[in-house]
Image 1 (cartoon, rainbow, N blue to C red):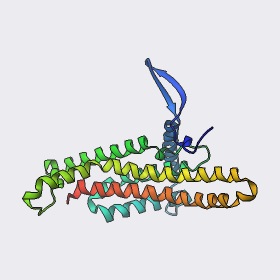
Image 2: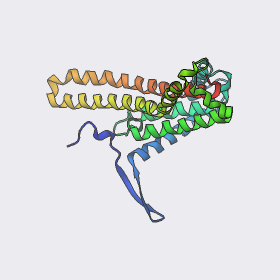
Image 3: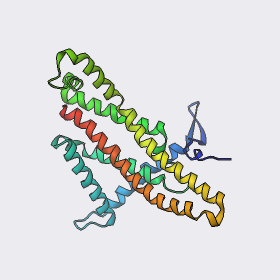
Image 4: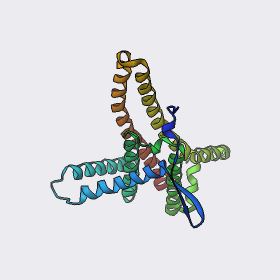
Length: 241
């Protein structure tokens, strides 16, 4: 008998052997590939016949890009413009991953901590490298706020360093927990509707319909939150304190 958490388990789909090493395609791998291909196809068809008067897909893509560039300007400033394609890709990939997870019988890759942690660690490493490339060893001044008393310097450096190192974990946990919680609630209420029967299952079913709409909003909101936090962290690497 399956439970509400079965949807979030990574399962082997196709076992493979390559160069003497046993590997496998899992549902997480499959839906990562689907999200990536979907994003590429969306941008391809949106820009295939780009014109001054945009079509629906082109308008949607341009509106999304303008939204991200506006976010970059507000959080990073002019120095962030060079990273607009990178940040836009982050936003669109997380958004597509969240939305694809709303499809029946799909797998929500962002509801699995291993996936969100891998994404967060990648962005954390990239942002740290950007900080050292822009400022050299002066980037380490990020861990000592300007004007701080010298007597408190060791404690402040320790606290700032710990705060910096936990960023990928808090970033990944926020996305993972929000996406998983909503899907668990949906599945629980769907099962409850079936258990109580036709006459008494109306209210749980109505709640599910309303909650599905709310989950689409949460999918977009979590992509926005994930992206704006990336912008805030990148701002530290570009502008320091």
